[in-house]
Image (tube, rainbow, N blue to C red):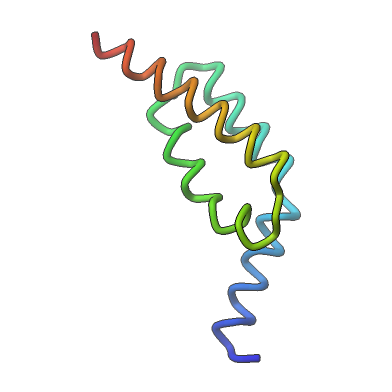
Length: 77
């Protein structure tokens, strides 16, 4: 295993271990109308979802990201 693989594994371990807290922060940001921060955050978690197959969380994150993107679009009208 290379150093890069180890760092990637450690990063994914940290993300997976912190996922519940990260999802709570994301939901709170959405509730507070901080939509411009919510939907890009979903993209940042994509590697975790792909490599660790966290499909239920991926669905939750994607639904909230879509709601925030739509709300953000409405805010600009």
